[in-house]
Image (cartoon, rainbow, N blue to C red):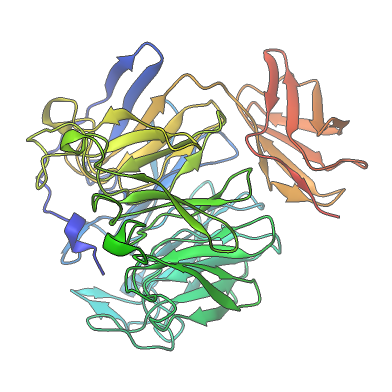
Length: 501
């Protein structure tokens, strides 16, 4: 597993700083939080917006596999930057509640958050560099009450890194990087798994990778409109450089593509933690950490049937100012473009060990035109952070939010926001349902809303708060956008709501 490539020891400082950096009149970067160990350290994962408009995330507490600063946390942070630690892992004897959460949380239809920890739990069969335990699946309420739903035991997988996804059947689906029924090369045991788990904690292993069909699925899954689940493995496959796969909810897996199938790996290699996303054209989009025309990673498009197109190869600009090594996936924004981050590359800065380039935020159009929006470590001492490990999230206020693994005032990582001038919108939870299904509409400044429509069909609704409306899918509704009329204007959903018959 190629994790140590991104890990270095962090310097210890105990100060707090909030930075505001105006990159252009239409673009504003803000450092909202610099972690200082007491409130967490080293956020590998990105953020998720809750029904109250605040953001929720995790800190791993772990800088290297042999250097544990803390067991990790779950935190809440307001859009303006006020952070609250909701839970500190390893609060139970033997760390049966888990430790070192690497993946992002997912907001479920019940209003709670679900996630995983890489280590800890009730089973100590899995050990690596001093870390004990095979990992857990947990549920946590918005107020911070945590319930451990499952402790992995190795045979059913271990070291879950990717985020869970809640599918249309109400169950959660995810991956473990290691473990399962099939052996892979040391130092790890097992090639990884795909699993299903109910909200009450009943887990079913759907597939154990065997190397030939992929190994080490670091990222999570996405459910496409056809009902199938799609994901990637970081290694394995026909060429050993990772795969894209499809798995039906019942468990049958199909390898759709093996990377490095082209001479020189110009099609990319090692899709890392990035979750695939499905765009309105029906295709799936993602990133690879390596490969491409310059060996610095790619952005790719792949059809549900497995035809892959490389859209962009990083380091296409002199000095790799366009970035190197996208570690996570993309987010499709309300302007129709894709936004993402690279872990390295960008403008040269000697404050960033070991590569002197600290990572970027970029925009790429569906036609593959890439624009670098921000270069990390643009501020003295890298107070704005460096090495953005996680994917971005677009909040309902139109801004993007994310985290950096390192940097900030204390070099334990940051939370940041980036405004590029996009306006507010609404988001539905879930984004699908039959007539009569209860739906939460999340947004900004929803107080005083006078109308809710599903593709033009009016629905009854109740304004719960300025950030939440409760409604149901109305009779006669068809697939299309949800719109909410407020005193400040009409807000449109960021994705199409699918009416299931």
